[in-house]
Structures are given as structure tokens and as C-alpha cells.
Amino acid sequence: MLLNKIIYLLPSRFSSVIYPLIKWYYRLPRTIQFRGIALRLHPTVFHPKLYLTTETFLDYLLTRDLKGQSTLELGCGSGAISLYLALNCEVDAHVSDINPAAIDGVISNAARLHLPINTYLSDLFANIPNRHFDVLVINPPFFAHPADSIDEYAFNAGQDYQYFKSLARQLKERQDYIGITYMILTDKCDLRSILGHFTSVDLKIENVFKLQSLGEEHLIYSVWCCLACHACKQS
Image (spheres, helix red, strand yellow):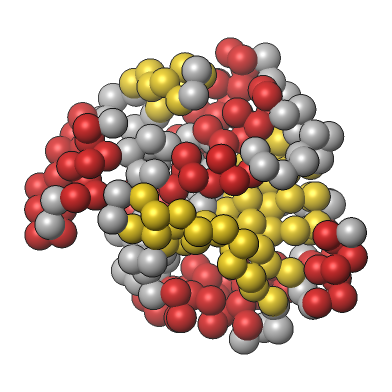
């Protein structure tokens, strides 16, 4: 996709021009194509094809045996990953997002595709019930800036990565309800600071996949509560 190359390969000093143009173009609902699925994308919702981590993450998840598994996509944006998995892998799909437009979009797209997807309007786990999920999927924001508008929650993790501090604490609190967590980051973010939030609450984190893509490295991590639990969940 040409726009991918423009976003990834132009010097960062041009981002102040590129991102407002993208935001202007998607100021109205538009239908996009994602792996053979027509998705109605609402304004302010993260575009699953402009940034390549979504494609990398889905490709990795497709190497896992997810049939019949309950999945939660935390901070789902368009919900493209969960919609695809529900349509093609027979998962029991659940999604959440802090952005009401994202949840409205998933509900309408799931209804059109006749997919029973459970949705939660939630800041992390705040409005998600304490129920078991086999697989937790997270494509998080990873820039250490405050989110000044609803669409910026998809990119900005807050001062000092407050998002990851809260996420790690809540994962620790919910460890009995989550089978395994997969999270994607890139080498463009401050990996040491981000990953340190998980180890600080005694969560174990392991890099399980790497992929070089248009000048950046995509890194997928698994997160679990202890080595014994991890061995049990992988058996």
C-alpha cells in the first residue's frame, strides 16, 4: 500500500503534515477492505491498514490454534483482528475500547457479517466482567505523550507510559482469568521503559516473534504471571 510507505519512510519531521491529512480524509465514515472483509471505519478510529502492526499481529495469531478459544482484544480500534478471527477461526470473540466510535463500528460491522461479538466500552478492564479469556490480544499505544483527543488514545500511552503501568497492574490482578496475553510493540518505542512496568509487578514477558517491516522491527511478546503458570498454559 503506497500510503504505508509514505508514513513509514518519510522523515519524521513530515509527520506534522501527514497525520492531519489522514485525519482529515477519515473525518467521515468510510468503507475499507481488510483481508477480504469490507469494514465501515468510523472517524477517530485507528485504521488497521495504515500501520502495519495489525497485519503482523494477525499473521502471528493465525499460527496459534485458536479454534473454540475465547479471545479479548483490549483496545480493539476497528476490531479488524477479532472480526477476522471470528469469521475464519471460530473464536468466541470479545473486544473493548475506550472510544465509543470504535465500539459502535465493531457492533455495526459484526451485525452486517452476522458475527456474535461481545463488546465493552471500557478504559482497559474497568467495564469488563471478571470472566475467563483464553487469549488476550493487545496492540497498544506506545508513545510517551498525553492523549489530547479521543483518537490519540490509539497512539499515546500518557506521560511516563501510564497506560502500561495501569495495564501491568490490572493484568496482575486478573491473572486467574486470563490464559495468555499477546502484545505487539516495535523497536521505535522505548522498550526498556514499557517492559519494565510488567517486570515491576512480577509478570514475566517473553519475545516470541520478530519481523522487519518497512524500516522498523515488529516484536510480539507473551505475558504471564510466573514460569510455572506459563509452562502449564503452554502444555
